[in-house]
Length: 304
Image 1 (tube, helix red, strand yellow):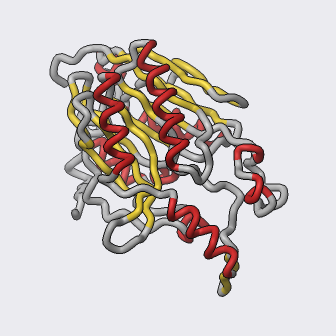
Image 2: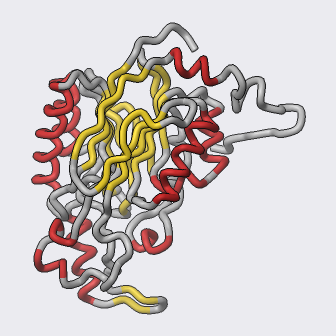
């Protein structure tokens, strides 16, 4: 670690304007300015904040079957996905420049050539540039109806005056080798946007903080049935176990201690000052790629 400076981080827990990319971007503009007023230099939004994580929807699918109504709903979702780069990323880049922040958000990305959708994490610099795009390696369960698989070539970090920043999306964080790909690059601020509001996810984030010895920012949407458009509410699966999604956004220290959160049952923004010296202190007794590694026993290679 070179000499770094402290960072004020903001984790935004909010609901998007579902299936409406323009109104969701407008909401992001307001929330980003709100966080920047509190001197935030890094602002994180949840997984697929644009145009929303469609929890509880099945898009007319069963094993071996699809419906025309489900295809129409998929078309609506597809129409509100964004191209990268595209008009929406231009707006977000300008927003990052106006607020002088590193702005990171999850989006559903529409591939310009294939039309396939991807669950993607975008990073914008304080200079207004789109500096990193990561596509989720493996959509979970029924998410595979919506999103293709990332190819892993974007498992790299961004280098900032505050340290090396990167992350994985939701259940990618359960992939040990994906985490190791980040650890081996010396990650210092670990971002984990998600759609998981369960207690087991909190345990996962604590484990990652302890394992990585870096700061971990967990970010989720707060979601109720009423956040969906009225014409879609009737399509939600009855008794879905995580509607509403209570949230659970949290900021953790390199020793796995809670700094702020977890935030439940409402929208809000968590703020925390991240002191890079805490990373060094945490590595005194455990460094996953340093003195606690055994390269004579284990070999790790990223193939792409």
